[in-house]
Length: 205
Image (cartoon, rainbow, N blue to C red; front, side):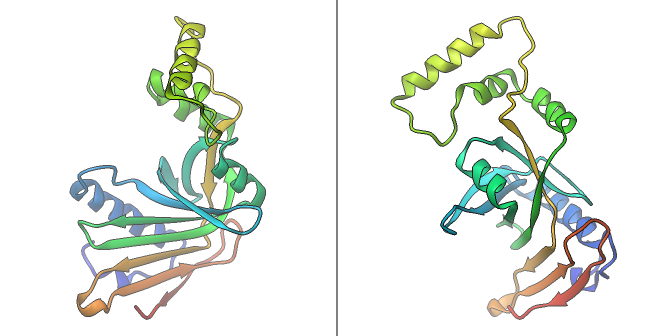
C-alpha cells in the first residue's frame, strides 16, 4: 500500500481492496500457499475446531473455500452457518481475521472450480470419505483405483456432497506487527446482510 493502512476510510469496498493489496503482497513474499488460512467452526457441544484450508476466491460478497460437506467441518458449517478465518503472513508480519455467516456457493461456481482441479484431485473427492475412520492407507488407494477405472476416458462429475462455502464477513480485522508488541489493529465491522455499510475502529494491541 502506498499509504498507512490505518488511513483507509470505511467505504463499501475498502476492506476488500485492502485485503486484495495484502494478498498481493503475500503472493510476492510467501514461499508457499499465500492463500492458506485457518478455518474455525464449532461442533454440537460448542467446542471449536480449527484447520488450515486454501482460500479459492474472494470479492465483495465474501471469501470462498471448498470442502466435502460430509466432513466434520462441512457438517459443522451446515449446522451452525457461521465461520471464522485467519490469515497469517509471517514474512510480512501481518494477520487478517474474518468472521461472519456462511452460504453455499452456487452449483455453477462449484462446477467451475471443481473442473479446474487436476484429475487426481477430482478422483480424490470421490475416493475420500473425509473425516471418517479409515482402516488402512491401502483401503484409500483401492478406492482411488476403483474411481479412476470408473471414470476412465469420461468426465469426472462433481460429487453432490462436495461444494463450496462463502463466508460473508461482518468483521474484518487487519493486524500489523509493530515494535514492543504495540501492534496496529484496525477492524471493519457491519451488520449481517448484503449492502450494509462498514464502520472502522482502531483496537488496542
